[in-house]
Image 1 (cartoon, rainbow, N blue to C red):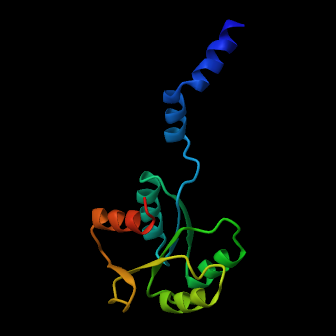
Image 2: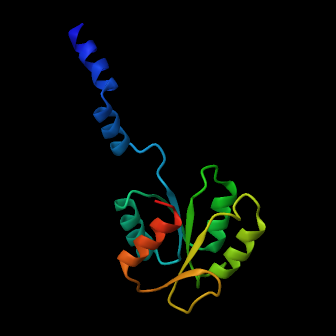
Image 3: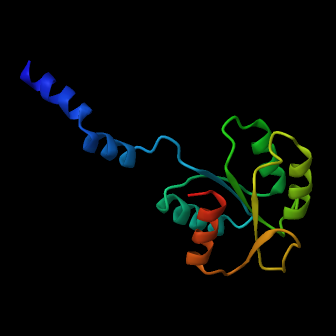
Length: 141
């Protein structure tokens, strides 16, 4: 009987609630990476997961768009390569902006081939710390 009393008292203790919130965040921000380079997707995924984000990936713009259209748990941010087979980052962005349910999701372009006017872009290779800070700001974290 004493053990259950101690357990219930611990649940009322604010320090235990704080600990639980930090260990098991209620809502992790979600990021989708769309890039045709598998090694790059995996490396960037590891970095973002280490920063506390939930990550999904797609191998090109077509797969990314399909994932978004049929996914119930949409990402809070999309990172997309500019140059990819099947559907480029620009083609992906044009179609994304035409679909009401996903048009409001912000996009950051990751590219080795120049910038996109009016969009946030990172030229590969980029400084990881600057990238993490930008992602954090875009997600309001």
